[in-house]
Length: 108
Image (cartoon, rainbow, N blue to C red; front, side):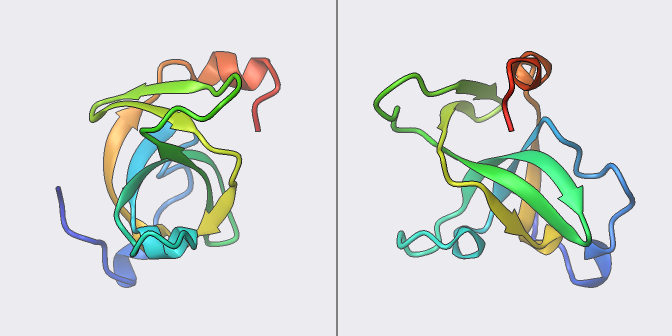
């Protein structure tokens, strides 16, 4: 896994990280009570110096959860949308091939 970006590097150009990409994210920024473990997130937007993400989980939730295939394996979307600082994004796991179709179906 690559290193965490510095505050200076957090002033990232528009479009990076891009919606549809999966990134490792510092868990403390997501506000879960799991000790702050690093977890994958799906980027869904970037606005005003913040990145909007959907945390992913390796445990399939009940119901019709959306499966997200990425370089580290298979995860499912949670219902918990979050906005995080770009410095919390540790490294990219690449784009999710199903993102465009998910958005067309009304995913947000």
